[in-house]
Length: 79
Image 1 (cartoon, one colour):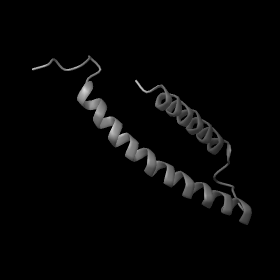
Image 2: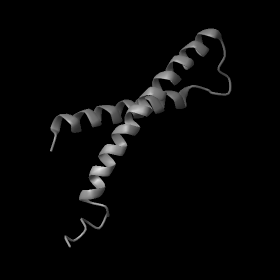
Image 3: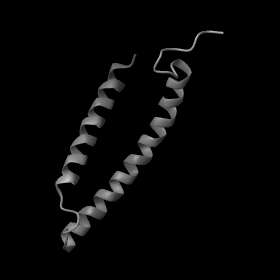
């Protein structure tokens, strides 16, 4: 068990929820203006980079988990 990694996962999940809530409160159909475009361009670039980082983490951790416990019913029996 890696308590630091689990803590960081929780931090990422909390930040992700916060970002999703903020985006939901921005009226997407009526956004306008150069400042808003600039901020949204920067946010899109950052979120795209974050998605790439987390995609790598997901592949590595998902593969690790799959070998340990691939079923909600519990671990596969040892052959």
